[in-house]
Every structure is written in C-alpha cells, then in structure tokens.
Image (cartoon, rainbow, N blue to C red):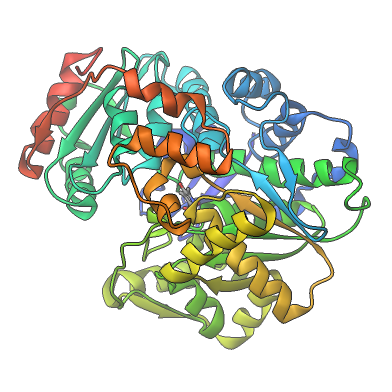
Length: 496
Ligand SMILES: *Cc1c(COP(=O)(O)O)cnc(C)c1O
C-alpha cells in the first residue's frame, strides 16, 4: 500500500482511499510524497507486452491494489483495436515517431485511463465499504463523458450519470453518448454551453454531498484529478520506449523527448512521473492551442487566467485552469505544501499566481512549451498529410507543430515522440476543411469522404454509430439538474 497526502496539507489517505475519494477534503490533489524513492527500470521491461508493462507501473505506484496484472488484462483485453500493443508507436521521420493513443473504445486517449479507473474504484469499494453504492456525476465537453460511460458500464456497485451541454459537443460525440449501452448509465443534455453545464454539476455536488436525499449512496467523479486516472497513463511512456528499442530506432539508455498536446496537464504529468521513475526522458514538451496559458507560464513563471477563452478546433484542450499543474508545483516546491496552497489561494482569489525565477529555471530543465493557433493547426494537418501521407487529428496537429518548432529551435538530436490523442474521425469537419474538401453535411458521409480521399482507416466503433439506436433523449435546464440527479440516484438501475 502507498500512503498519499494532499498537495496542500498533511491530509493523508491510502492509495485505495485516494482513488475512491478523488480529491482531498480541503480541495488539494493526492500525491505520493515518496515518489522520488520509487523507480521502474525500463531494462527490465524490454521483453514485456503492454499488459506486463502496465501492471508493473500500477503495482509500483498504487501497490495497495491486488492483482495488478489481472486488473490490467480485464481493462484492456479485446477493447483496443490494435492487437497486443494497445498504444502503438508509428515512425514518421528518422527523428519523429507518433504514439497512437486512440485505439480504445471511444477513439480518444482518455480510454487508456478510463478503462482501468472503474476497476480500481470497484476494488477500493469492495475493500473499504462494500455495501455502499457509488454514483459518478460528470460534466463533459465531449471526450471524457463517453470514455467514462464505456469504462463504467455494467461495473457492479457503481452507476454513472453524464451531463453534456446541448450546444457544444460535436455530432459524433453526441451520438456516441446518447446511444450508450449498459444498465447502470444515464446521459442527459443541459441547455447552454459547457461552462453552464459544468457549473451546474459542481453546484449539484456541493448540494448533494451530505444530503439525506442520497439514501446512503456516495458521489464521486471521473475527472482527471483522480490519481487513479493519472497512474494508468504512465504506462505508455514506458511502452513507447520499449517499442522504439525493439524497432531499433533508439538504443537502450538513449534519452528521448516527448511532445504532449495538453489541456488539464494530466497526460504530460504522467510523463513527468515516468521521468521521476527513471525512464530516460530528455524534455517533455507542452503543446497548447490558442488557449496558451501554459506556454506563458513556462516562459514567464506567471500563471494568469485573465484572458479570453477561445473555442478552437482542438476543444479538449480549451482550458484555462489546468488542474494537474498543482501536482507539478508540489514536486517543484520539494513538497512544500504551504507554498502550493498559497498559489492555489491566489489562483482562486486573483486568477493568477507567480513562481519565483529559480523554481522556473528548475522546471525548464524538464519542460519546454509551445503553442499553435488555429491557422497553424489546419496547416499542420494538411502538411503532415501531404508530406508523410499520415492523417492527424487537430489535437495531435498542435503537438506536431510544437515538435517541429522545438526540434528546429534546439537543433535537437534526440528521438522525439509526439503523443497522438484522438482519431481524426472524431473531428471530420476540421479535417476536411484542412485538406480543402467540402463537408457533405452528414458526419457519416464526411467520414467516408475523408476515408476515400486519404485512405486512413475509419474506427469501426465510430462507423457503427450510424445505425445505433438513441437511448437517452432528456434535455433539461440547468436549474433542474439537482432534482434530475436525485431521481437518478433513487431510481437505481438504468437512467433511460
Ligand atoms: C483530454 C484531451 C487532451 C488533453 O489532455 P490533458 O490530460 O487534459 O492535458 C488532449 N487531446 C485530446 C483528444 C483529449 O481528449
């Protein structure tokens, strides 16, 4: 078992409790204060497959969970459409490879974490409070909701209710959610945009937390600040290294760089964990879209949310408060919780905080940061397809742009891996636009058009949506969300 503490105080929890709770009682995030004492030597993983590597990482970082290998097998077997390597590395040039993270059931990288989190939560529930049912409430701007629904579907003792903004998810994303299978799931549209929806869900959480209307059920969330979502992501940094060695593109011991399309800072933080555990990583390059709050942070040491929120073609990275950065601050401040708490208080009160120059200098040894605007994103999709015949989604394009810029500026000799976080077929209109093709008006005809023009394979589960039946049709006003959630809790079983 690992004992974790909050980033902001000495509130402690076992790894099992931390996964169940999600967040510490004073609002801090759970971290392992002894992370620097742990290590995973990649040399010992060279002959292992995805399951073997993932279970070593899980068994090291969350050792309180029993039978990590069987959890991992259950999470990933037959769910990822690419055989035994669930996150394949594809060579692009001599110096750049792409780590494809989108072969899971919902075609986004969040599947890797959200396939395992429900099993972790389930085991923690069995051990800590087996009689208590858990209801997951989640607001989604698209990718999280569907990946969470797929992960939690038919998990015993846990039900999940997802709210999405009626305006603000793509047609494909909506169809993915309203056709969701499973007896323990509910999906409901909320009138308004994502902010309205998220605020209403947060309010519902606070109202319901200790309410007797919950009938003994406990509430939890599937968002990316849960340590049980972070840990599963460490695995694919190791896996990509092992693959590059076996492809003979690097030698054992070589340093490599990773470029990560970033929103909430969860994915790239998992890379930082891998580096702390001893994986030979040179730099972690943080790639942002026009919401470039992190680029400015790494340039100036000032995290400042006073800026317009820009809707982009890479919506999963349209974020101004990157929650997981708090964990990086904890490690950068050498575990000084008062300093983390001080930054988070300032962020809450003033919308900004500053990190001293010497800390920033240390951070820059591990991180570089670049951003890519909308025009550059489109151009990058077009260029990458034209030069290499390889179709990337808008989030990955942001990463690819950052990778090229970083490599040019630093005359980089190290092998660079760009994380590819979604299938281009989730964002067909942006793709067609980038390639100079006109949309047909139907998302499924658009998929076929994109396929005819590029030859890139359409993920079966996305094409299958065309004939999938809608199960969830409810649309509510945000004021109705609390009573809708209570009804779901009381009903038990399906929310349809
Ligand atoms: C969530 C998401 C990201 C951002 O990941 P973070 O862990 O939030 O930084 C990038 N790309 C896609 C497609 C996503 O769904």
